Length: 334
Image (cartoon, rainbow, N blue to C red; front, side, top):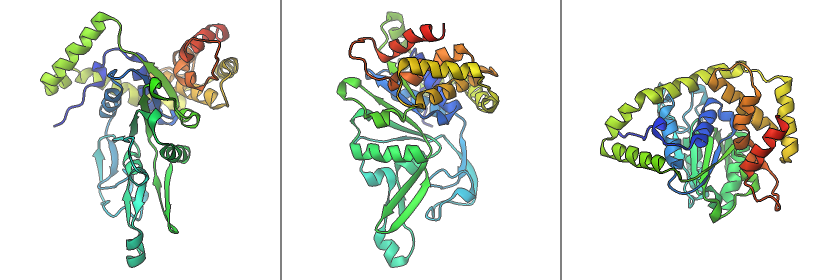
């Protein structure tokens, strides 16, 4: 049995872990962008979170993790008749992936010869109802970025070739990571991420020692290490499931709506996606904490990750975007 490094055993990086937990409570938030140093646990965190979540119920053999027999596409010939459980999918999208590998490929010759849809599903099909992880997302080729933008907008993947078309659900949490020193992310794709966090290598010596200690223990005996953190992971899983159940009942009063609008207006964030994402993330945070209503404390806790990547550039302000958000929080939510 292959073991995954436990989510609760990750040292530090609290904002990154918080962002990923909130997208598990409400996948509609829109994914997480993690920028920062290499070797800071970005890919470890997303795989650990997926392993932490309960398995999904899906049709056996379905290429798109179809939830019921009614959701199985006519081209999905490997799908059976039984509903089974499978781990929450985590799919890597490599930088060099071709368009056919990402969206899938149609067999035109077979369609013409035999009169049937022959479709080879791609990475987007496999990621449905799970996570799509892109390392070095800022180096992704433009035509693949355009494909992701279309799918992220519609929640559906449409493939058209020579007058033939195939479509399937493609709803996933998009997680991207990268180093800002290696290139900027296109604004259109940047805006599609619900949350953005910055990670840094720990500067505290004791924290660095603890990272080394835990990693060495995991590599020496993965089974024993995983068992040691099993209870802590179970507590996070229970809180996520409780948050999902409570989310529809979490209220956001007029004061919370005004706070969201005033904060985004003061920050000069583009469009209205900032307000909508901020409010949605605050509701997920409240649900995760077991609160019935969004408060200013919830807004303060999630505002930097929901808004920092939506700010207009200020050449006269050398502070980072997260620092600008924190600075204005005190003024607007005083």
